[in-house]
Length: 139
Image 1 (tube, one colour):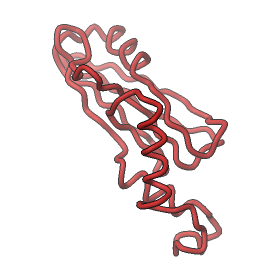
Image 2 (image 1 turned 90 degrees about the horizontal axis):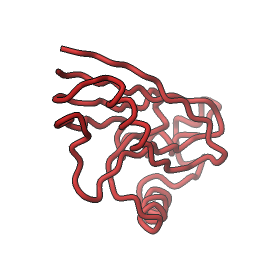
Image 3 (image 1 turned 180 degrees about the vertical axis):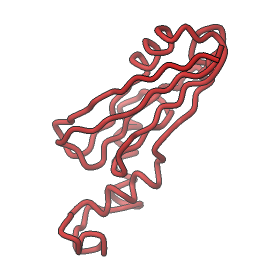
């Protein structure tokens, strides 16, 4: 079995951003030479996410509004975690809700995604350097 590991680094300009990383993941799958297998894409920070969804700006807006309005409003006094001196309790809950990793099948050397599916990095507490691991496994 082949194994190929790469790291993607991000330092977002905004505290929250959604970034389409599909093309970069495809490049690493191609570099791996794996024809049949899986790629794991995982945020290596507890205030970020990796997820699969549609590349549509209205949806991104909806996701950010849903996180702010329903899941975890950015209200520092609301979270016990913030008593530690941090102010990112909401970001931890957002990551927990969206998830920190995805596994995507590789078939005939290509990501085997549905017609509208893309891979995204979700940053919930940005403006600092963070990384994502891309691990390709297969034959």
